Length: 259
Image 1 (cartoon, rainbow, N blue to C red):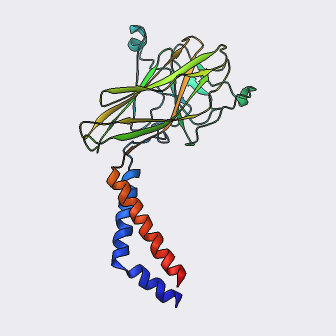
Image 2: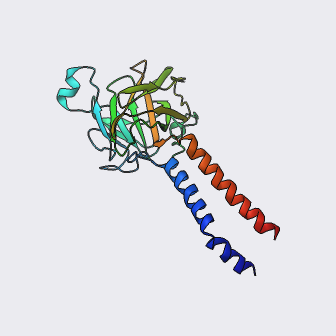
Image 3: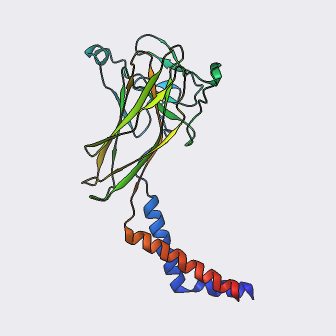
């Protein structure tokens, strides 16, 4: 008898419409428009210098030069696509060498880990030869508010000492917002911070830009980024439809349980 009742229950057209409407609302809220927001896809693998040895697919990284020399010699920014915190990345910005962060892998117990998003993450020097990371986001609905979320952290390059601070400035459709500065003690790590910002684009596509800044520049402060995602903020009517659908499903379940 339970099987027959279950078949009648799922055959109910009204319930099917309720479930479909609720599912549509939930899916619309979770919609994401960012390509490769976790930096898992690359042109030449991770633990390499960006602009020169690899790039994160879907993104464009360009040098924000502090002098014409760096742009002229084509060395690229001091930015890296990291596969793990202990990854040693080649560095060619000033001279051939390697780059890694202070952390447990070199004897400093500062809690350095990969982000909660997992996998690769993006990293740039926030005080010198900074890289500007950009992506054109398409498929937007004009004048609808979107929530941009991402993970950020601050760390320090191995071999340098001194307190530093970093932050990310984010520009979307010409509007800029900035995170608070993350203050890091010498050889330290800030821990990963979940960031959330809201933007209202005016067109169906918009340029998204991440630009780090920090100080002091020579130590250097390294800004980390991962898990970039974008989702529309649901209208109040969408919330109501979602809640109403869930309540209807709960009511049907209670009726079945009382039989």
